[in-house]
Image 1 (cartoon, rainbow, N blue to C red):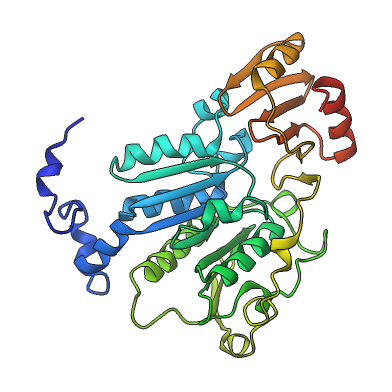
Image 2 (cartoon, helix red, strand yellow):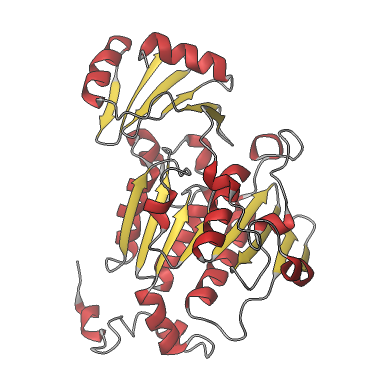
Length: 354
């Protein structure tokens, strides 16, 4: 590796001024803003389409520390829009968070990446996110977003909501005490089947890049205390129709809601569902036990079905044609090849016995 660029490290700032010279020349960021970025700690919840885009963009922008939380491994259908991952990653079967750490360090060896192969829940959110400066939404479901929103309001930690379906995208920065929060805009999660999903409507990769770019920009503005401060707005676009609009949410921020004004954090007091259908995948996630499984024993047990993919984070095997069972070190299981939770539980019972 060529380390000549180290000679450009400023003794006072601690970041590579030559590397970020074009960014520093932008007058609304400057060297002071770049210094703040190099000292900042952002968390990305979900390292799929939006999460991998924002992780890559923030790393290239010079973020000092990234916590990445993701529960899954790459699949073939991820590759058109999840830009950190390759065909080899799909074949290797390593968790997305672990792959992201390696890839981001290849982009900038100075970034500190803290990967967690976990499913964010009310039980672990404080342990995983209490020390961060900002949270970036890379999730694929409203239950997790409402959990993050309640945590943000309670702990006074900003977060940046982002969503994309088809060619449409939306972004909203939530700054507790300043802007409207997610529950101000959407009091309750949409009922199942009431909105299109990535399964039913698909996703355009270019739309992911736009949402991820706006999320990155909003995150940087929060971290460098940009002036004027971020306003309470919702940015909405449709790439296919070439429509762009910014919706003023200041009226909502004045009245607030039970989360940001009423100290009602119901999503922090809600236990995880025992099963969930994963967006964009023919797969079901199960939570059969709180105990950490013995992956080595499970690998031996699954070996009767054929080849077993085993690493420190998970064990995976095809247990019947088209059906794959993945057992994670934190006790979760993902059954790929079905969207029926009852069938998934039956398969796990017969193959793993959990």
